[in-house]
Length: 263
Image (tube, rainbow, N blue to C red; front, side):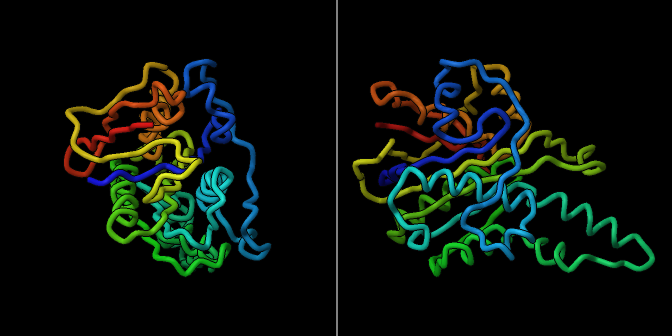
């Protein structure tokens, strides 16, 4: 396939508060240590929407806003892809709980936030975007599926694209069946042409196996959250330019997605 260029990266996770603050960890220069994520108030959300935004929406905004710090491209000019394996599990739990009560009194705000494309809707309102937007889920392969969709928007439709993937911690009792133990989100700004800010070029293909991480704590995070399956790619993108090249394998919908990274 034609190359797609990574213009900027955003990240949000325990011990990985932003792309710039995570570089030393991702390069192996500093040991990874998980820490509780601080509350986040999305800068781009108007006050009314900010009050209604759930932790999942805030997490999606957190990585997206972090990525936009690395590019002069206007948010309103970017097509978007938002991917999540499970969506907003807190909202799902509250609605399910309400449905088994005699009154079945579902919160209007929860109903409003229950759709899988809620973060995309909040984003388009916040930045005034009329560009195409896709929201998708592919279980453990959600990051790979979203990356394929985002790259297609760039190469086939000629659209600079913001791709965000997020998953929140699963609440009890859902956690017994879906053990997502940590929140994590990642965002990439992808373009069809190289710019002075380009971090790397990506080409998608097929790989024999998934890429594990050498750091045991980071590898545990990778396994604990579907969005964190992106970590091998983030580690590759974080390397200094001379050694940034390599191929990573990500769990895909029909096997393992290979992502070739070149400076």
